[in-house]
Length: 155
Image (cartoon, rainbow, N blue to C red; front, side):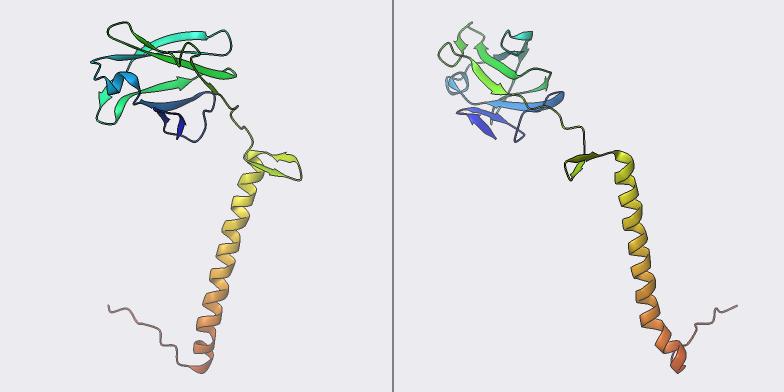
């Protein structure tokens, strides 16, 4: 997904405590810079600031980053000549969504994993019952009419 021109993520949304692959095709890629570093942090105060060298590919400079906790993911780019691409001094800022902990919601009440396992067992039993009914419908009339021949094993 492209959130800002020339910055692409391999996911639809940024979720806390997950990895994301970032592709950059901005100013430094277009100017053929040899090295590009991504400088990033989280939240309004740029907590947990890191800088990582990006890998140059045909599709742009790329790197994989762990998205930590915070309201926003802030980033900017720097090349080997110490020039910055920081969105005209405003930095690139993206919202981070909280990771969902519940799998299903029924009637506004969260369902635990135990309930999901019970649903799975119920589903498997319903498949077994349907298969048994199919076999009875298919083979029972043949047995009653005598058209069903049992294959004898050769000894």
